[in-house]
Length: 259
Length: 277
Image (cartoon, rainbow over all chains, first blue to last red; front, side, top):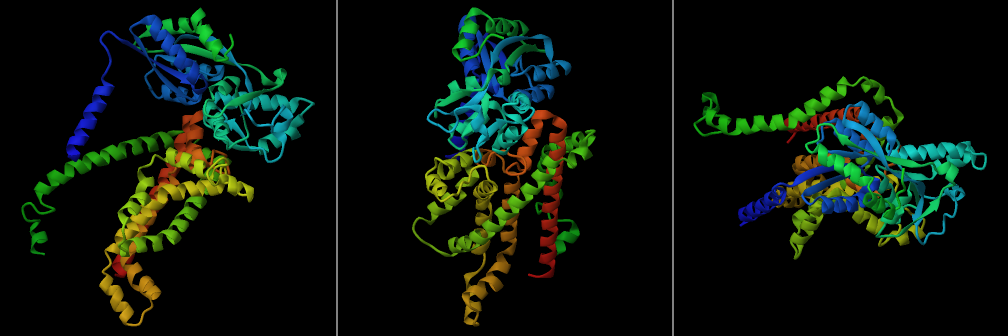
């Protein structure tokens, strides 16, 4: 009985894995975690426009993806949340051709919709506030560090204020989405993350408290074809699609801007 | 003992036939486990910054935190789990099977799910988290949360093992000790526990091993803050974000220390086995 069940399960599993259609081309896309929702939509739209293509999406922190690619993970397209990681990938010889920018994003303070604890940047320094940031070295962490440095240099805030903000940090999310998840679960009061992540929150609604624009800076997303791709032509078509009218429309629907 | 001198009877353990049947799978398994570890060591020690990374604050913090939290978790599990395991081993009641299953459930529940479940219970918006909050207790993102997560995932390994150990102790021996004038407590400490000690220690080691390697429940429930909740596994994944080198160095350290503890416990056990019982 047990044996029969195990065999049945294995059969189901194997048939599920081997279900690719004849003539279907697969494209494996490694993308930054902040692109989770928009790339899911984009992949669907691209598949519709191509007919016989299937996109396999893999989301994680850009830096994790870059390390995986360096260690030989197979992928066709790499979409990074910052230019630093893309440059490192390029220097490691991972890319086929140069990267192109396809989207822009901004960072903001994300809080639960109903929360009244935070109205402005100043409130991030309130003692006892629970703040989550992106881990250092990830794109979200690197952008955040840049923002904190600019805040420290700004005479309205200064280094003491930034120290108070740092003292409020209770956790570093390993990627942008993980940082936001702690706020969505109601455990943290705020996260510094991409404005687009506020729209992704479905379980608990989030809203973005904007940072002063001269401090917030801009996040740019480059994309590139991976060297050794099994479908370089299809990969290039996906890159073109990202910057096509339809692609930009989907990106803008999710709150991303043009680079 | 005639057999062993002759090099084993046909079909008995130790014979050539057995070597073929048992030896090949053993060799394959050693390769399977050993090759990745060997690769980890070769790449880890080969890093330029290997020794430098040992001295980093985050590494020392993570090591210290991992050891403090896992030892506290094991101590709590031993204190609470021992009487519980004994109770389960000696009592027969309706629903015991169900209770056994419940206790072992954390072994099969994915750690991330365990962490999420703990948040749903003890988190700020959790089932009893609100009540805790009102008396000034906030668990998420604290060292206590790290220990909670480790107890949650580690305790079943000890309770299960200790229970089996207690079940193997003949209740007749306990009765004899008591008819000889020992109190139930004395009987437990002088008779039952020594006889079950191997199972108990084995269970504690498994519990500790599970606690020190705990990742999913910790990052979910306790977060990831260097010096406060960032244990070694979390530090390793965080380091991976920046460079493979320091992640490898951290991994090598964790494996070496865990190996040292396992070997030390085995040696101590063998010694006590030869000396006593």
